[in-house]
Amino acid sequence: MTLLEVTDLTVKFYTEKGVVNAVNDLSFSIERGDTFGVVGESGAGKSVTAHSVMRLIERPGHIESGEILFKGENILEMSEAEIRSIRGNEISMVFQDAQTALNPVYPVGEQIAEMIRHHLDYGKADAKERTIQLLDTVGIPDAPTRYSDYPHEFSGGMQQRAIIAMALSCDPDLLICDEPTTAVDVTTEAKVLAEIESLAAEFDTAVQLITHDLGIVADICDRVMVMYAGRPVEKAPVEELYYDPKHPYTVGLMSSIPRIGDDRDRLQTIPGTMPDLIELPSGCTFHPRCPYAEEACTRTEPALVDPETGTEPTNDAEHIAACLEYTGELNAGLDYEVQVRESTTDERVEAAPESGSVAETELSSTDGDHDD
Ligand SMILES: Nc1ncnc2c1ncn2[C@@H]1O[C@H](COP(=O)(O)OP(=O)(O)OP(=O)(O)O)[C@@H](O)[C@H]1O
Image (tube, rainbow, N blue to C red; front, side, top):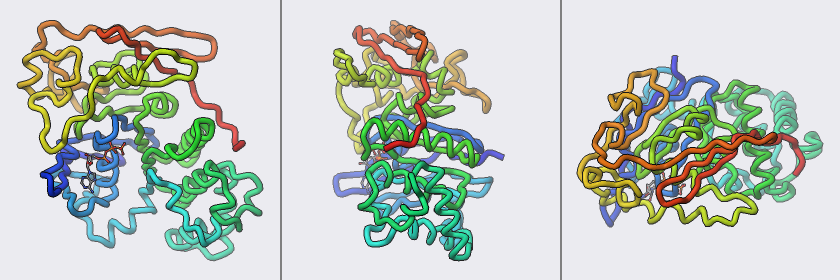
């Protein structure tokens, strides 16, 4: 049975300025042990999607329609007690502002042990032992001593790992990580991500990783969903997305990956910003920013289709995209090139949109040592 199956999810926020269409008709699924990336710029609806899965959407937000099946049970129809027993237990989440998840006045170890006692009904000594084991697993050096340290005695990277340990403490089936590394430096980021990856493998935990960075997705995800203005515009196994991106927005995102020592101004490659979600553009919501947009794109909203056939995807279709190119409605077509450069240490993919800019990313895995 599929672990998580989201179908036609629509979420709106009723604000004074108007109704924000945060998530529109979104469907995706995550299998057990899968690492699923959700990418897109700020405001794409990534966090709202994750919060919906945890049923944490609060007023003025409202889940308008859709189904969220977790192990076959509809999360949206569960009682408060049922959803509470799943949250932090079978599904746990590392939030964007992860550091605030630690209470500054209690030792880190005690906070994790408390979670374990609460959710797994462990005795005091067993909970402490499991906590120390977990701290050790996430790479906290000298875990038995560090157990009694307060959050401020941990470095940012160590705090982040402690939070991941906390999220994993109940051995969840699904770990949702919302930009888990925004608050840490680049070196720590690579280590934390490697940690999530190896722990997920060790515990057979599925991961939904939310990020705006396709480079991170390349490092650790199996499958990816690219979101734009509350909708999925492309879904694919990670390698296919990199070698053969089908949606112009994905190509634009790949162009935006900044690299150290890179003198090209990559962040400029997608002109404009995410549209106002109160008044979405007509037709394809990406058309105002798309270098290939034609008249048809201002009128017709593209459906997610199998790019090979241009038809509605079958259930087992792995790569799907929402662009009129694939339903034969564009005259000039898409004009970008994907180049694959291989080197001894990594593989790089480049995609060049019409503007002449080049998208590039690495398909190498992060190094997973534990130093801070
Ligand atoms: N409580 C709220 N009230 C009003 N609008 C909201 C609220 N929460 C989210 N939204 C709106 O929903 C849209 C999607 O937000 P969301 O946080 O999911 O984006 P995101 O892709 O996760 O972006 P980021 O990477 O910045 O977190 C945004 O336009 C946001 O303004």
